[in-house]
Length: 252
Image 1 (cartoon, rainbow, N blue to C red):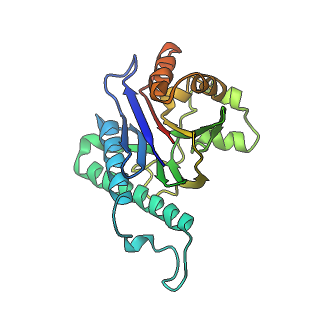
Image 2: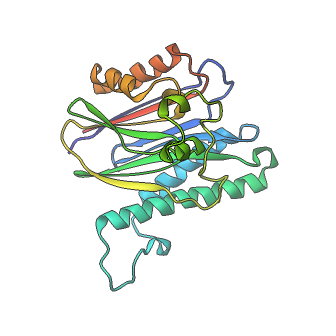
């Protein structure tokens, strides 16, 4: 299956530096987006370290011992193996970021969100930590594939807060998990069968803070795959985002 991928990141109208990072490897089918935070320039350090560490693990030719999910005499499914490799990759990134933070006081407390997609033939494997998101546009219908790791999302899940009200809260981006800052992480993982014409989209909260899912779907339905990153980032800027904005799309 042919894969095409595009990405764009923008510092936005307020920040002096861009703490988002993205990595697109169409040859290996690995795509990663991260949104860093913390310390003087710590956010951009953490996000860049994360995308590189995750990529390095996922393109490795051998499974590290730490990813042995089951006993040696037990056959693990491909889904289990990929989920464990993604978990291991994100925890390796977390270890590296924490080590760097300890060695460089100016980056103390840095961390990052991470969302990763691995496309292998007709299978897509997704993992995320934090509130950067992954979506799937199929047949004109947009589906969110990730659930934010935030305090506000916990309140929504518990029925104490509506999604509409949550968008107005100043602490809506307070994370319950991040790579690096929170130490060991438990990413959410999922597997999806890929169909021709599918478009996967990954983004940081600089997009979703100002555009709801309905608006994102409308914009994605009206643009060619190669134009989607520009369309979405420009819309976020026009709608007053206060953050860095990063969008990556993978078309099949």
